[in-house]
Length: 349
Image (cartoon, rainbow, N blue to C red):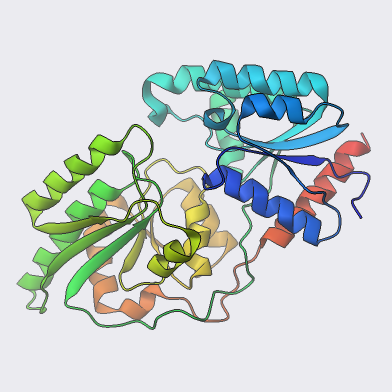
């Protein structure tokens, strides 16, 4: 049975969106633990407002792109929700200067999200620091609860490390500028050159984008293909895959790389670990935090060192796979329990 302290959980957006998927997974974990309810699942912000009518307490996972067509519209939607119920939120995709021309508008919208809410969760200490750095002091408190994994240990049913004469780089998730596909193409070409100079037998380089372009970034695929052709690197873009196909690709032969330049919290690192992979991860405050949270599940590299990191991984493919009993905690169940305790504490105020 749900506990009195647990709110209704609002899940907004298309099922395959990363934030929507995580919100649903967390709701399922709360229900499995015996304190959650069936979530309120809706397609967009307008439906969300209708769904919360009559609810005493609601928790929603919020990013501006799911709650409105503009940051301002998203802020208005969250404020309407807060006028109808006691609202707590988890923030995703926090504003950073890398947002470019939309930065100031997103800052204003996220400030309104926080000010409208009775409590706020972010998914890392790094994001809590981003709130301070970009949004300044706010009335609502901000609590960090890390993203949970689907299992305590990696899936043991994955392919063993193999020796190949092609250097293959795998990048998971949507394709858009700054995600690291261009860096991977250029680093793969440089790595092949170094291996050939050293006399290592190698046929060439291949980069596999496991996913498709984000909406509005379809033209970026052709620009990446052109650069790959210039450097003699084969580029494969799989397009959006179903869950089973996506997981098979994560476990396939190649060097997993998470080269996102401006990551604030990433489910893709968990996706890699759950499939028994140890990705190369571009150094950042968040990467260092995750390296401490789940030791041994990623290899951190400096941006200029990616070619060397690829060379080392090519020579030692076993370094890109996790031992079967590597701990992946905190899990989704751990995260759900942390939310339960947080909601209970808010109810006592």
